[in-house]
Length: 349
Ligand code: ADP
Ligand code: MN
Ligand code: MN
Ligand code: MN
Image 1: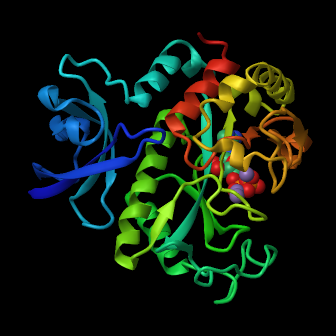
Image 2: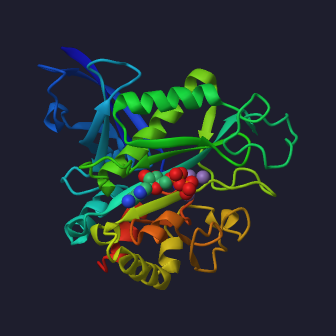
């Protein structure tokens, strides 16, 4: 059967890498029986993606993960790729390769699970959705998880996106309207199913594909999604990517809290190293206001949304579970965030 595969990869844009994709016509023997081997490697022009010079431009896309394509439908796929140099080594922009290395160097043994809360802001032209042209809406308060045409903006796109993610088989956990009007969140990763691993490679791949689908579906509405960590200056919430994670020992309700506390102590020592990797423009968001801890401080606490690390109340009560790193910005790279967290808590160099 002749179908289409959309090959998706991260470009070399600085300071924040973006997504690129192109379409490969596939000839699949049986679209119900596909594996990574069904998707051939492919080349691209790295000089047009900030990844190479014109005179040495050929780079390779290596498929590493795929889901059903909910837009093109039956038999078509979205294919996440790593970018490789012609000699087969990971390209400098390939942040997924470092996450693989950290897992192989010992982190995988701890059976880590991740869940990202991806916040984003919808814009039409230069204003966030629902904002009067060149002006401001009513102050924050009624918008978070709101309902009604005067409270939430962009729901049609958000619903489309939710359905597309589920149809694709992405590990989406939930969706909510956020505190700032025009701002939304989806969570992707651990979703409480027995025997389902929320391993960091899969979950980070899924977040990149969720992002791609959001941008792609926005094309239909003439709406853009931005991951800017502080899309509007002033008394408005920024956009983060709270990163929830656990290891096997943290999830054990007999003694998991001790493992969580040990991880927090290790995270405290590496605060600056984490901040450096948690997204461009992070200082604009981590002000100590609007449910953040100041970028210069490290604090943890049960149920504390003004802390760097929050232990959810139910985790503290149960005696084990997971913790939430509230510092990453919406524009942080989930591969980089997961790799840095695992390096710190598993003490990998
Ligand atoms: P918040 O109260 O911070 O807004 P959400 O309900 O939006 O929380 O998100 C909870 C997140 O925690 C989800 O991304 C989910 O995948 C993640 N999560 C829950 N349990 C675990 C766990 N044991 N390990 C890792 N992540 C988890
Ligand atoms: Mn949330
Ligand atoms: Mn949120
Ligand atoms: Mn959160």
